Amino acid sequence: MSWLKTELWTAEVVYAGFGTPMLRGALAVQGGHVVGVGSLAELQARFPEAPVVAKGKALLPPPVNAHTHLDLSLLPLYRGPFSSFLPHVMAHRERRGLLGARRGLEELVASGAGAFADIVFREEVMDFLLAESPLPGVAFYEVFAPDPWEAEAVFARVRAKVEAWRKREGRVRVGLSPHAPYSVSPPLLKRLALYAREEGLPLMVHAAESLEEVAFLREGTGPLAEVHRRFSRTPFTPPGRTPVRHLHTLGVLGPTTLLVHGVHVDEEEVKLLAETGTKVVLCPRSNHNLQVGEAPLALYARHGVEFALGTDSRASSPDLDVRREALFLWDKVDPRLLVRALTRGGYRALGLPTPRITRGAPASLVHSL
View (cartoon, rainbow, N blue to C red):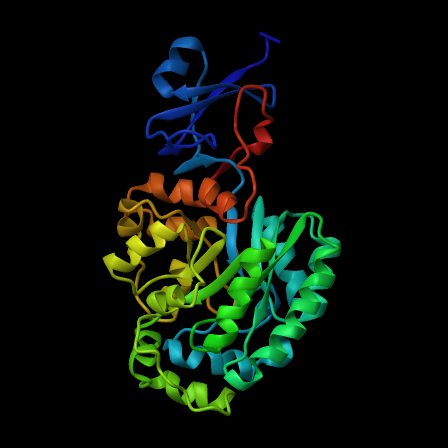
């Protein structure tokens, strides 16, 4: 096969799915297969006649979209204050459902995603993902129940559904998603977290997304108070703690828990996430559109918190291509953090092995930004 032309593919960051992402790395590609992985200088010495082909900002294994709401894919894009986003979703609820989930999954596949995590609100969408998804991932069944008095009844219904769905797991596993610390009552949050831990279920919760959420949990004040009154018959009793501390008190944090957003956290909370092994999924474009700020990615990295990237939904992001989340932050942090988050961080968050680009791997395994 020596007669086949060899090319050296390079980019600002090259990551083979293991080790450390390389800043001056390259892949030697010959006849549709990878024949070498290493520094550009090393591969140029091995293949002195091979042309160097720049492939953009990064070369990496298939990226992971670690947070989607596929059933919202037909909703109009919202840009505005966070407290108005849930009412926006409710106002367009007739567009939410199986058709949107199908469209969303098609978009995920077309974007080159290697795996995904989805928040599932309707049973028909769970049935669809378990039966038809061509991609591996986790479908997290969403629970939205702010009234404490209904905690036991809601838990019984959720457990029955989850147990039935788990018998049909294949490419897609079943997880649980208590929506947020302000939309699920403390007794139900605690019960769901314990159940997930006992059964080995992955757990995903939206938390620390906005300053409104922080104020509501601490003091019961702010715009979310009115939102809560629309969905609950019970007056809200604020726990007097920040979202992450509240979740920790209830036993929600842990190595199988994914905390989505994590924008408004302090260093003590980041240390708490690191100590408990909780992983974080960042959705920077959604955060930008909902005007909630930017997550402290460098702080997470400094304390060793594993993080992944997600697009959130089409209702708060322009598309479901998770690579564009990394590009959105590219010049703000060390880009190696972003490439790792797209790949190893995402696969580890979902309990999946990271694909490795090694000698003999098909060139089709290599994706670019």
